[in-house]
Image 1 (cartoon, rainbow, N blue to C red):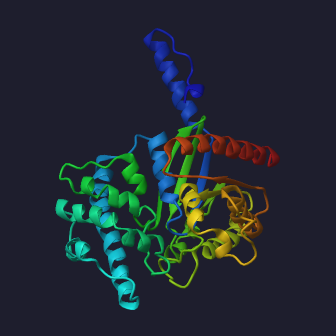
Image 2 (image 1 turned 180 degrees about the vertical axis):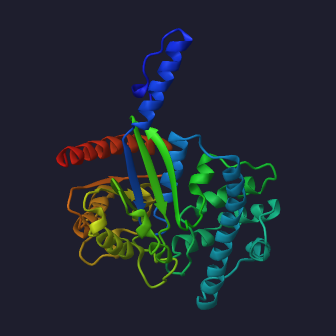
Image 3 (image 1 turned 30 degrees about the vertical axis):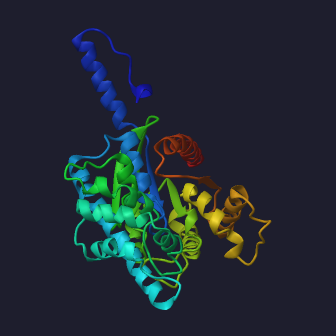
Length: 353
């Protein structure tokens, strides 16, 4: 906020005047409202968490306590779902079985009700088996809906189980909590006051969105790049990418956003880079061949074009490939984003004069 602060002078009277000017300037700050939209698990809440770290005071003690309880549940619950899927796979495949050296840890984790140090140790041991990794990598085929952050949970399970454990920012960015209703934060940067609103992305939450649509300066729509072969948590028959594209068309054509600028975040590009090496796009889309999407750039361009074609907004669509768990990358992105939003808002304001 340095650009909004007048120069200080020495005596108390002048200091008081400076304080009054500063207060007046604060009240006069331009106010912009940003709305985060997208399907569940696209990274909206992670982006809001990053803004808390970058532009607020980070996480409160009550928030740290909340995530201290959530992350052990993420680790244990995710591994239990993978093991349940593995058991089902063994029942239908003669080639798969629970190895004798896995069984003790397998049974311990499946029957656990909380993440103790012993259970966390068993999770780490199980994660080192290729068979468990394979089931996680092929989780869509096995109808297992677990977060993409599972490898992070499993490699940090022992730390989560420690009685003195305190969550780090990275832990919180990777934590999986379903957003219900609307959550917002207000922060100042670049001499502008931003209100950032995050809403739940599951189908059951979308009917609550309408009350968030008033006076939106920009819509930030997030999609997870790695979801092209995944299905919805709430509908096992619906592909996540197709659901996201349908939602993007629906909300971008809304009359509520006729004056809003649109920014598309193609999120989780770090996971996308690794995933397409094992599961290239041409295996999932009939309109492309292997040579059409031979690397990250061409694969990203293919997904991006699908959203460009689905966009129904009146203005330009800005799009960025992102990794919301990377604080430095998110900070650089938001600076560019902020300037774009402010410029667009100023243009709209001058056009309306």
